[in-house]
Image (tube, rainbow, N blue to C red):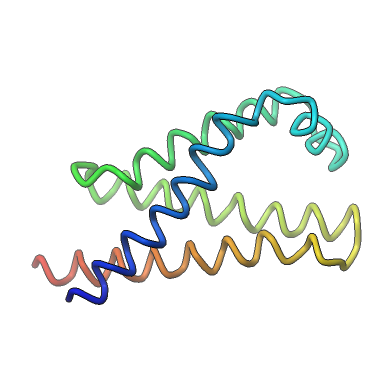
Length: 123
């Protein structure tokens, strides 16, 4: 069980930093806005996405969050990473930048699996 606890906190901590802290600090910058525009999305979508990422990251990192709410946060991040991959692929084609959503999705998968292993062990 210790292995799953360590995997959960490392992967979830990384998600918290990359999907909660970083968007909170950089989501309002011109570079972030240009990245959203480059993919064909309006500015307000970037703001909405930043707020959703921050909320989801907080939900995942807090131990007192109900499991159903965590599931919604995990689902939201899955859709976010999948949509980022597809958007980058359609707009820019295959390239090294396309790997970023897949790498974060791999971290998400470790967090998701370890969360469910820990949840099952509590029952």
